[in-house]
Each structure stands twice: as structure tokens, then as C-alpha cells.
Amino acid sequence: MCGIIGYTGRRQAAPVLLDGLKRLEYRGYDSAGIALVRGTGFFVRKKKGRVEELSETASERGTVGIGHTRWATHGEPSERNAHPHVCGKFALVHNGIVENGFRLRKELEETGEIFSSDTDSETVVRLLNRLYDGDVLAALKKTAERLEGSYALAILCADFPDEIFCARRASPLIVGVGAGECYAVSDPVAVAGREGKFYALSDGEFARLSPDGATVYDRYLRPVAKEEKQYGRAEVPQLGAFRHFMRKEMEEIPDAIEKSLLKFIDEPLKNLMRRTKSVSIVACGTAYHSGVAAKTAIEALARIPVEVCVASEYRYGNPVSGEGTLVLAVSQSGETADTIAAARLAKERGASVVAVTNVADSTLTTAADLTLYTYAGREIGVAATKSYNAQLALLYSFAVALAQGKGREELPYSALTELPALAKRALRACDGVRSWAQRFQNARSVFFIGRGSDYAAALEGSLKLKELSYLPSEGYAAGELKHGTLALIDRNTPVVALLTNREIAEKTMNAVHEAYARGARVFLVTSLPEYALRKEVSASVVVPETDPLFSPALSVIPLQALAYYTALACGNDPDKPRNLAKSVTVE
Ligand code: M6R
View 1 (tube, rainbow, N blue to C red):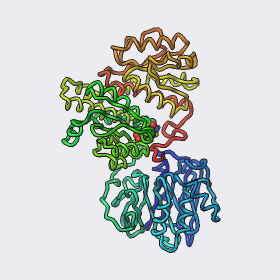
View 2 (cartoon, rainbow, N blue to C red; view 1 turned 120 degrees about the vertical axis):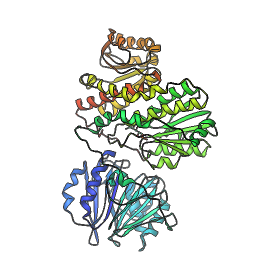
View 3 (cartoon, rainbow, N blue to C red; view 1 turned 90 degrees about the horizontal axis):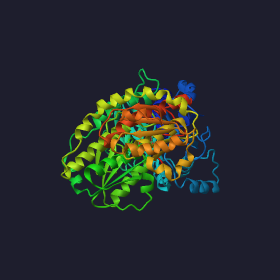
View 4 (cartoon, rainbow, N blue to C red; view 1 turned 90 degrees about the vertical axis):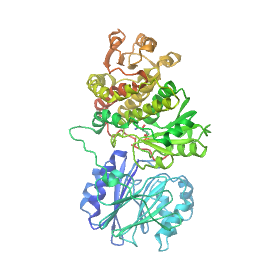
């Protein structure tokens, strides 16, 4: 998603902006740009493609500026649609979506404005310029009142050449105050390691930054005191000896699991668990898949009904939730717009909401009654890896605690504490799938099949493969294949079968046999080595055995590796898949 960095201070701004934009790259983007205050106007440079395209601007003079990485929503990825957008005395960068942008644009065009981009963001800078009569904050407040949707804004005004003006609604924005300098950023990574005090703007707030400090204002433009956050202490992840963050982050899985297991259930959480009659899990993408895996574990252990909902559907559905419903809103970033909206809706309906996130003080935490943190560390690869395993660790231990609270004592908690060591062994199995990549890269489509927990892992394995290799792929319940989908399977359709539950292994093998009989080559990921010898199996990797309820935390590891190696075989960058963003902060 889009990224913002603003700087005002004693140093030259361009190198600071470019460094910030480089750090924001991992979020996913298709164009980038910067604006510096220059005399009575601005120096602006925008480029389609990578931040490197802007490197010649590093020597441009100017101590105040804003920069942006854009992930296209309104208007194609192009130089003209890249930010900053300039109108009259203003240059502006915007994260979010102005939902009434089309209407506002029409209104402005009818009264003489000529737009130079296709973006919703340009309507904001044009409106601001119209409403300005010497008081930027007053004009910004009036502008904000006209906007529907979400925004984080950083704005330069030629009349106030030392300052940056900010506004936020539903898109994150952080203000940093150092010695003789200030920052405005949309993501803590852009200020990691920087000296200073950092403050997160809340919805509806504005800020005014100068080298001498920053003032934050509420929606009525009254100054407000803010609580300091520790963003500067975060570290900027380094690749070290790895070629890609994704592969490095996979190596961090055992640690992420170990740290994310719930070791202590405090009273507020115990109380909440006691009141729980049903659980709804709302999430997107990989986090949704960890919800699917958690459902199996919670229902089996705690005997409480669980529904798993794609957050974007939940928020516009008419969910039945209220007292007694515990909503787990799961999100690595804690900034996914759909998940935040689903959590807010659940709360409105009277449910108890627990956020499960990897990012301290993320927006999702403000929508929840309680927050449980995963400790996967910062994840840079767009494809979620260690954060999935961390979510599973947390949700599985949550399932065990919930069951204990319901008086069910015979529980496999020791199996959870063994997971980190087993994950280390599963990582060693990854070399086994390296040679599979050649056979996948030219496939017409791929199927991942399994039952129960294996089905949950199949969904995630399939998502990994499609987002990194761009191959059509589907995760399917093994028993469902014969009800129509088998028609798609032939010799050009590799089938990855997951087999970790002895009790239903033969049932899954029926589906394997049906695929094999139609010419498919079958690749097996199993904790049951005897099945690797079956004639239907072309190739296999063996992962360590654990309680079948928890097996996705291990069986997903070779699937992540398969996606990684297939991406390389296809010539794709596994860290930056096309069209995708790390956290999706718009609808
Ligand atoms: O930050 P979140 O966990 O809320 O993100 C949800 C999805 O956007 C995310 O998991 C996405 O599906 C990943 N790129 C998958 O690898």
C-alpha cells in the first residue's frame, strides 16, 4: 500500500525522504515521488517504477519535503498519477481512498478546475487550495469535512516554507519530533532507529510540524496532548546472508512460534473466555487461513462453535453477533481496513472483540476490547510466512486455554511447546521441494488438497503459490474434488496432497488416487512416511509428526518454500509480487 514520509529540519530533506521511501518499499507500490519546498514553489519529481528511479534527486537542495510510494487504486500506475500532487500553493501526498472523490472531482471540474491526474487524491489538494485564505489548518479542516473515506495526508504550503501539515482518518500517520527536526510517516519502519519522540495521530486529528516541534490538534483544531510511542526503537530488518526477506523470515518461524504461544492468561481474558458461547474469526488472506486452522482446533478442544469470516464480507453482511460472541480479529499488520471495520461492527453489535496482531499500537488494537500480540518480529516479505505460524501458535494456545476454562483438562498443550523444535526440523525438509519448482513453473494450474487441518494448510499453500508464481492455484477439500473440480485435473495439473492425520489418511488417499488416475502428478507433504512410498506419489517431503490439530504450523513450511522456489524459477521477485501490497489499508 501507499507510504508517506515528510521531513522538516536542518538537514537536507531529499536524502531523508529517499531513505524513508526505500524503507517503505516492502509495502508494495508502483510509483514514487518527492516534493521539496523551493523558493515560493516546489521542486517535484515523480517516477513510475522503483524508488531508485528517483536517486538523482538525492542532491536536490531543500530542508522541507514530502515523499510517497503509490499503490494504484484510482487511475493506472503512471507518472501523472504518482504523488505528490500540486495545486496553487500546496503539494500533497495521500494514503487512503476518497470515496466521494468522483463527485468532488465533478463539482470542481464544473467550476473550472482542470485536473492533471486520474486520482482521488488530486481532488483533496484542489479543494484545499480553493478553501485556503491564509490559514492552512482552517482550510484543511474544511477540506476534511468534505471528504468521505480514509486519508492520511502530509501537505506542504508555499506560504509556510518550514512547515508540514497533516491530517488523518482511518489511515495511519505518525509524527516524530527530534532535535531541530520533525517527521511525518505512515509506517513506523520509516522512522525506525531515528532519535526523537513519536506520536500516532488518531482519527480526525491534524498536526502542524516545523523544525522547532509539532502540535497535534483535535477535529475542532484544539491542541491535544499525545501519548509518546516507541516507534524509533524498532529496528530496520537487514537481509544478512539471505537473498530474500521471505527466505530469511521462514528461518525465523521457530522463534516466532515459541514467542507467540500464550503463556499466561490474565483475568480480563479469563473473564471474557468464561462468557464465550461462540467464536467468530474475522480476517483476510493468510490471517483468514490461520482462522480456518484455528476453527478446527477450537471446536475440537473447547467444543464451542466457530465461524470464520472473510472480513470484507463480514463488514457488509448482517452478522449475528452479540453478547456471548467472541470475535477474534486477526491481522499481522493491524492496519487491514476490512478487518478493522469488521471488528468495529462486531463491537457495535455487542460482541467482545479480541485483536490478534503483530504490530503494537496498530489501528486494530483501538477497535478491540483486548489485544493479544503475536511476536513474529517485523515481516518485510509481502507474502506472509512467519506471521502465519505465529498466529497459529497464538490461536492454538488460545484454543487450549478456552478449553481449560470450560473444564476440559486432557489437552495437548505439550504438543504446542514442542512446535518450535519441530518447526526447525520442518525447515530442513524445504530443500526437498526445491526440485519440484521446475515441474510447477509451467503447470496450467495447481491443486492443494487435504482434509481437516490439512485442508486449512492447503488453502494457505495455494495462496502462497499463486501470489508469488502467478500460477492459477486452488486449495480444495480433498473429499470435494470429485463433486465437479476433478474435471479440471489432467497431466498438466500438479496436485499437492497434505497428509498428517492417520485417522483420515486413507480417505485423503482416495482423492489422491482419483487425481492420479486422471494423469495428475501427485506431490505429497506428509508426517506419515509410509504414504510416501505409494505408487500414486511422484515426490514427497516428510515433516515431523505432531498432534494433527496443530499440523498446519509445520506442514505449511515446505509449501512456503515451494512458493518461494517456484517464484524464483518463474523469474519473479518473491519479496515483491506484482500488484500486491503488504498491508491493505483501503477497501
Ligand atoms: O496484515 P493482515 O494480516 O491483515 O493482512 C491480510 C492479508 O492482506 C495478507 O495476509 C495477505 O493475504 C498476504 N500477502 C498473504 O501472503
